[in-house]
Image 1 (cartoon, rainbow, N blue to C red):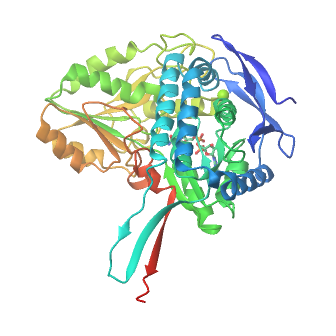
Image 2 (cartoon, rainbow, N blue to C red; image 1 turned 90 degrees about the horizontal axis):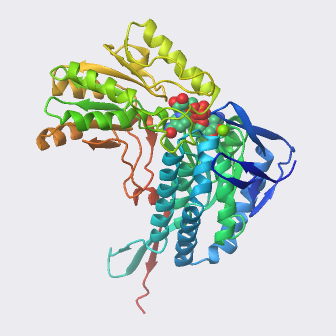
Image 3 (spheres, rainbow, N blue to C red; image 1 turned 30 degrees about the vertical axis):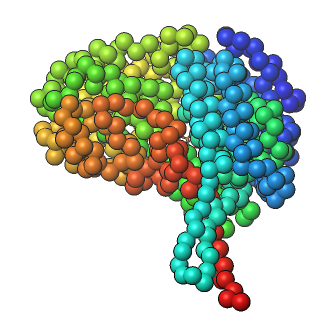
Length: 493
Ligand code: NAI
Ligand code: MG
């Protein structure tokens, strides 16, 4: 099978790389296997890409190790920054192509996908700015010594990303790793390998030395597991399910105790209090759950509404959710496209069935949308109780529950009644209430009167079982550097 293929999308035609990207070249996998990626809009294959497994991971790790000890080491911090900002420029230059790839392979609306490209470029440029600002400290302990710290790269980093934001997760991962001088073996999600391979081409064009970033298309149980267990990978960064996050941590412990950062699931509460500006709150609640078809780790899937505004809220929210434009990702007006895969579609539909069976009231939706593609109607369940599965488990689709609470205290108690702790929101016009509630909620991000407004300057990550470590902002840099203390004894003669 060839290593490149012309792909036609409804928006444009482009050249898609298909190979594994190792040492700045697109190559076939050792086993010669390929796998198809599916267009979730029509359930048909788009192309087949080359598949990487354990042996390919070994080859990629060797390439990354030799770049780390060789050419990449000679690249100055400023030059690293320049490479990152150049890559950001190329993402923006090719925004139409990248957005079309995301719409085709993931199913997100092309207008939303452009937002992902812009945010990815912003993230890379931001970390480009950090590259020559990675400093240690000088520490005065006594007059006979000089002590200082160096923030050195951790080394070869394995990065495993999911399919919900294929391009954006790629950028979140490589940005801080490259700014701090590491090299990378990236495994993209098997559902969405295409944008990562396209960016690999841009990485080469930007002038990164061979072996600095290697990209493997492949499956979790083979390529992903090989990364987590590898004896010559110094750190693994993972975004995905809590289940797999646990396996990765175990695997790291059983192999070389590589450093681990995890960005996992959530069941985030979105609290609406009686003094909220209800019209604005509805907009944010709608975006909070239905953005990206509910396939967000931080989705505001548990909506907790004070009883004083509960009925009015349900009325308005139903009306608003029914206005969301669901359909073809290549229609520029589309807000919600298909779910990413048959598996995800089935999983979500089974949660919907479970909710109905448990006696929750369907306010709107509750069924598939149309007859082709993995489309699901925006679905709101009300009159739910805390013990229902749809209230407890991450659904990762356009499905939310609305729960009645009687007080601020009850809202906080219910909000925290979960093993997760990724995000939360509170809607209120009282600044004291806003801060009191924000402080009381155990979550990595709390939005006040907004939702899902992520930014590369703001740290993001989870309390409790939602993860380990923080991505984005200056905080992410800490996961990609080892601190070395150097103590020099000053001779008295
Ligand atoms: P997943 O956790 O299986 O997949 C995420 C990534 O991990 C993919 O690249 C996959 O190939 C890789 N992976 C899978 N098994 C692995 C293993 N044993 N070792 C190393 N890497 C492995 O998630 P999946 O199955 O795609 O989705 C299932 C659920 O996970 C979703 O319904 C959702 O609840 C959650 N999820 C959360 C995400 C987030 O952003 N936090 C993203 C994707 C899924
Ligand atoms: Mg696909």
